[in-house]
Image 1 (spheres, helix red, strand yellow):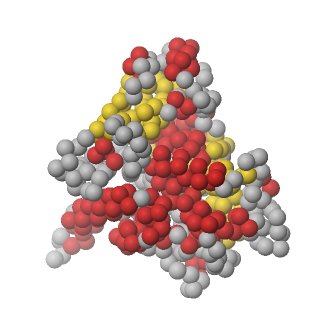
Image 2: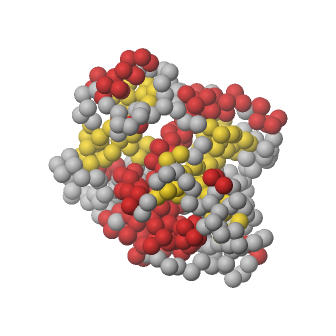
Image 3: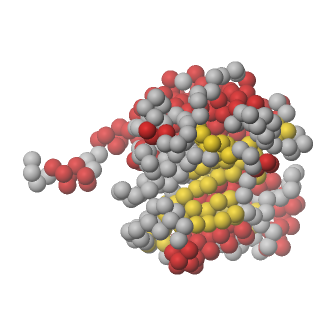
Length: 447
């Protein structure tokens, strides 16, 4: 089975050959909406090989998580809801490792008349940002670590205790977790390791680093494969940040480094008297720290994500950075030679990987282009340091920070910022109007 993405540049003839050799009859064509959910259409292989792509309503970029439509700057109710055109990126064509007869491909979204990139298409925007790095002489390497929770088929936790790193527990879950790893591998995604995580019913799978777009595509496919294979084995999987009261949250840790055009890691040691070692790494880091509050609404896009922000839970709660410290927002992994990197620990596991990467990369560029002061390194326990700024502890606060930041408009464009803000304010209004189980149980029989 030839599952890995095709060598660049791929052609329809390449896709036809691989489909024929692997019995592919259907192609699952992906784009990713603003929430990070995979959307698209299933095309018979014969239709896919015409190369025409497909059209889909552009309102898909601004509806809510349940596909309800609300007015936004991107799609007003009197806008007639026109189409956008999905153009398969043939370099991403691969045989699916979890379902027979299926292949997948990522799509670039464009205006059907002008053929320009759709302003809300985060994947396309990341591609443009990577060209900015190339103009400075750099390529970007990324890796993602995502945690998720496993539930029974009727959404009950599979455990009420924590078994972090337990191999006994890992073997119990190997029928499903091993099947997930196998499906990832068969789909051309290299797995480094899996383990039982800190939370009850929680698992983590680490993917091997690679070039930025490939890794972001793999992250989307990873979440899709986890959900599909879990269902095939009688489980449900969720990347919701905090699905269990009192339990550990699920995060998306993004490891990132820059290489020169010869492939040398420019974050690696140059000045060992400086804890960060590399001036390029220091400047990139300064941009991340400087813009953390503006990016929080992207890294933590749902109301539930803010339940994850708890001191001493390995979720960062302050604006800070440190060396190999899992309680800070940006963990600097130095003295690792070619593996020297920054691990940004802000994002929830349910965030849109393309938007998260776009924010981080633009923040890094901001640091490279500006002489920013870098606040002192946090050592030991950052939660005990009262001098550190606290991050926003509600979606409402973080959306305000995002919408008011000039950096946000530079990084994402005005139409995206205004639309994203409107989407989040609609989400907040829906939550505010809903009577929760907690409220009912708290008050109904005594007031």
